[in-house]
Length: 85
Image (cartoon, rainbow, N blue to C red):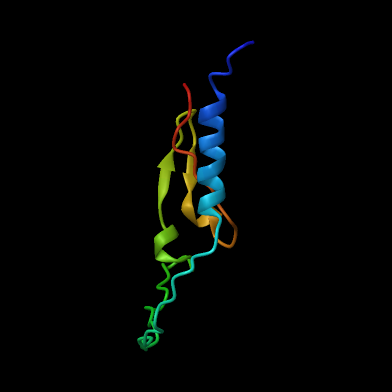
């Protein structure tokens, strides 16, 4: 008969996952919730060009050329800082 060396580890893993998915039988007393004041945000300041100040920048690209932050206004942007050269 062939031994199955991974069987005990597999069964233990399944048991741990099943135990983690179970409901807790402990009951806790309800706690009072804290009330918070509304968060105030500062108004968005704009540059003389009409874009938000946070987008008022320009950077040089690795492959040449530049990128302007104001061109990204109004859309979703994802920056990927790692690039193979």
